[in-house]
Image 1 (tube, rainbow, N blue to C red):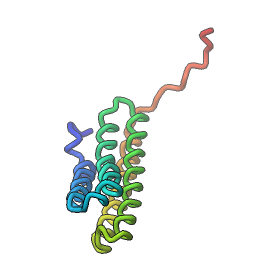
Image 2 (image 1 turned 120 degrees about the vertical axis):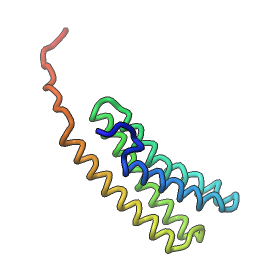
Image 3 (image 1 turned 180 degrees about the vertical axis):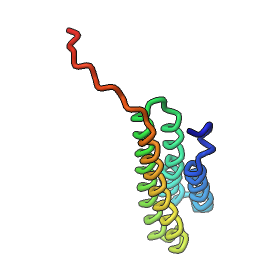
Image 4 (image 1 turned 120 degrees about the horizontal axis):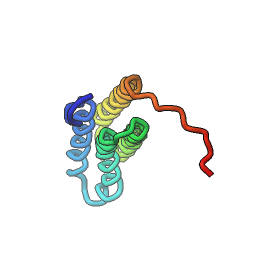
Length: 132
């Protein structure tokens, strides 16, 4: 296991994606920032935030829940990319690049989840004795 979340390449990529989205949205007019922009930034930032929250959890199952939330945030971010492109807020080329980067992130996240799943300790079966 790594010593710090910053040691994970997948986390650094999630952080980079959030900054790319921020840089695009920061230049939009007030209406676009207030409607699509805030949600676009929040979903993009949530990708790394959920990854780090899962990383900080003590139990494997808890970690996995947050990694799945990270994947969901990546999906949501792809929706905002499409809306931003359809409404002329980002060009189609930028949208394709961001969309591709998010697809790559999701594949790498799935691989990371599979990798850590193999090394996770196996829990003891629950005790079925009644305590009443």
